[in-house]
Amino acid sequence: MKSYRLIRMAVIVLLSLCVMFPADADAHRHPVHKLNYFQSEVIESNGQKVLHIEVGMNRSDLEYSAEADNMTPNVLHIDMQNTDIDKLRREIKLEGKIGNKLEFKELERRHVRMDITTVKPLEKDGWKVYTLPSDRHKDIPYRLAIDIVKPPEKPKAPSVSGVSGRTIVI
Image 1 (cartoon, rainbow, N blue to C red):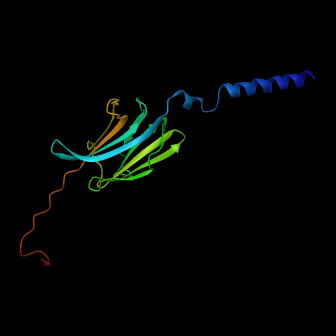
Image 2 (cartoon, helix red, strand yellow):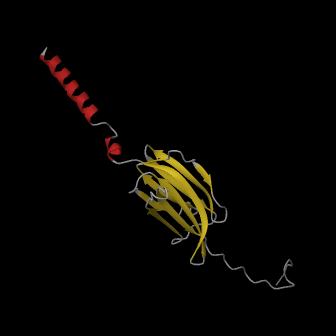
Image 3 (cartoon, rainbow, N blue to C red):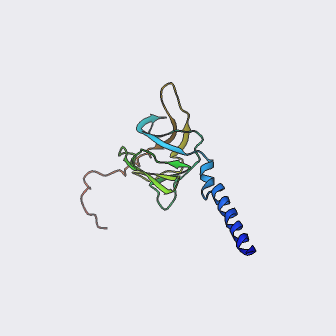
């Protein structure tokens, strides 16, 4: 009988601990950022065309990291912790001269990755990711802003008139 009471007491203690400390307690400690707004436009900055993207959210202090890796040189990956996509579309078509599309992917619960596909490979200093404060008077939410600079056009090789379209054998 004593062993039965001991086992019963151990089960009760274990169940009470499980109720007090749920498995995803770490996710509940941090506030969840809900993505709720999207805007993109091409602007001119320092004589260069820039694709400016803003993604609105309901809270400040977003934890994010951004990278453009060598395996996918045309894609900018922005990883956001404690984030929910909320009402935004999962895939958004962008202006076609700098960016093609923007995709939101939920990697796991409250962990979202935003992939921005560009027309040409990203240059090392050709993009910037930063946060912007909200403006309650103008009803503008907190925002994650992304600027992607259009790479300069490569000069075309000069052509010699009268030779184009002909084969030269030496």
